[in-house]
Length: 507
Image 1 (cartoon, rainbow, N blue to C red):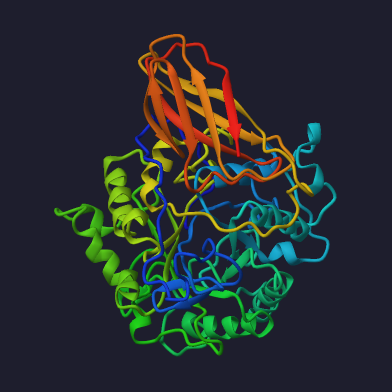
Image 2: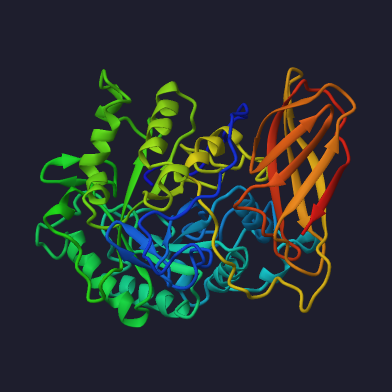
């Protein structure tokens, strides 16, 4: 993303976020009938505008960007504040099913060292002494155990900054391709890593279809994509757009108008996913924001730049980055319009646009993140905007977290008030699997001694009778690995009450 990386995001008020109902894939193959397993298992491939799993079931990427590997820290950010596993668990509990991991080629250099990781009190203990790539391995492994998928994003040639082209004098094309192949080979046998985004936000002087091998991003993507598939033919190859096509400019990486005439053609079929980036005014002004018809004009803008690819059944489209501080009314209206355009999961299932929101991190300078500056509290307004396009998670890869043999399911819950302004409050209940076996579902119960009422709840459904609230997991966060956690959030009124004790029931 073309932006600075540091600016604090202030506190935000609560917003209504309805729990995501279970959904079924649309246009599924006859073989993937009602008795089929949960979609997402194994390696993935494309089929027209959809992405399908190994069994042919349609899946939807509904995820989050977690950056840091592309900076001089050579590791995801926030490890100075929290354990990496707790953040991945929280992503899953909020209903995100995929992590996009930006990186720079620096992490593949011999002797590369990760920085800004806190190991005190046992935090991130299993990362101590590891190289950046080994830390990435741990993140991928825990994501897989949680049932999340990972897309690797070659974000920058080095930690110094974004580049317009896929190569620089210091990092030639040969290094770019060699490193892409190395990562593809590294995760060849791990279906948690479903794809590689070849290069982040190509922009002027990059072109699409001009035929100049030094500037034609489409030709470069074909060279790199074929190289990746030569060592790992199961991966999805995610190809971003450019800035300008035939004199029409847009966001960096967001202009895919050239696909209609010059599609990316790879040696292995059914592997290309086109990726666009789209932002609001907190990143930069664009002409469409001042159109008198805004935001009604936005679907036409998106159709022109990238939406037509999906609508014409050419290939899947993944919005790899979109985000905003939400401070202005324009930005709020933009995000609401974009989420609607991406197609609600409850209506369209997996027959929809794929996406990863920018970002998990609060330290993204001109967007902020899903987390607030303490790296723990959720910005429920932003997260709430995404509720309708979240999608079910995927099967865990089965490695690591579960206990052996049988046992009784057990859980514990902790109630935390995130903010209280007198007239109302926001709170979270975090459920932790304390038993020897994975949970398939959970339920929490508490009783307020005052007049508090739940006004809205996300990541769970609930009933309330008097002061007693019973909340049951949503479809996407009932499964909790041994030692893992899930969370629900809610708004209530009035504020000022004493946090109650919470009972947890597991199965």
